[in-house]
Length: 453
Image (tube, rainbow, N blue to C red):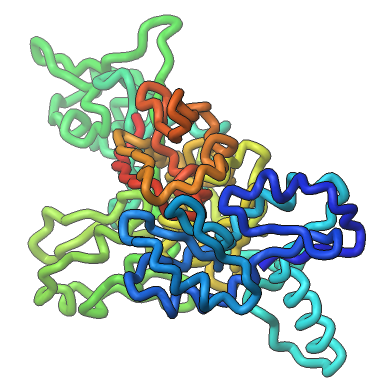
């Protein structure tokens, strides 16, 4: 519930702004519904629902205005006006921002503060679930990371990775990226600095077969390297296993497991697995079905460091300890995608920010991969975008608090001429901010993601 402090002057702005009429003046002070839930328990039609904020909303499609909730309310907050139930707090928080004296506060915060003081007085280490994160609390993992400023997308690391845990996409294709694999495999030492010595070349075609970019061809018994045109540059992305361990968590057969922070795979245990849940769990898509009959999967990093040695000229690959303290940039729009997508339920959405349980976070970066505004730091070039979606405001549940209109980053939600809240599909990006902000669960919402180009 929300409480009123001594600073209240009885101006009534909170009463005017409250969408459910749950606030009234008593002796010149604002008093509101205490969100005890007695009305929900008593409702014979199950028309009163508890939302994720701890408040209660009325489903007007089910409510027949029988008045049982009004009779049950211990503080006489509920009343029925023109067949509509009023006086039940949804904990939307509109009253807090509306109060000019800042006299409205969240009782949950008060309870938490008291809990903290009590526990600290007893020198106990147990913390309430909502306790704020300490500054020095961080999530961390050690993995192989690519320095994008140094990386030339030559694909040399991809070629030498023994487990196919690196995937590189380049454009244009069929052009030499100076990976120097041809120099390594040439048995006649006929290639140097990506130039073929035709007198030494035996036309064994080993370089043609091994070239990661298929940039080598043969014409009239001469092997040629198809190089970039003057001014032409290589573009693309490099995606590698994050060593987050989600695949091992999802592996039902025990074929994948983390050993002292490194991924290990036993193909003999993988034979009976049919679900391949590990592949679906991989946040960056490197884990995939193998063409090798000896093993079913590939694309997991074993931390061998072969890619580091292969990238000897650019020094773009290295072992690093990746950390995150849970902070996000000001670009965060409170859409809640990160909280929805987190496989460890480590993210809690608050209005205007998020809270990260760094003890649960494994730095899989799924939240950053799906974040529509890139507000979460990331080390991978893997990115997903919203392909399509659906958003619709159910009038029977909507209590017209207008929180959705305020939080929408695209101004896609507005009030029409009849006073109903509607979604403009031409503007909506289906980020989900409105759905997460709605205290009445009045928004029907669906979305689908796709891998971004």
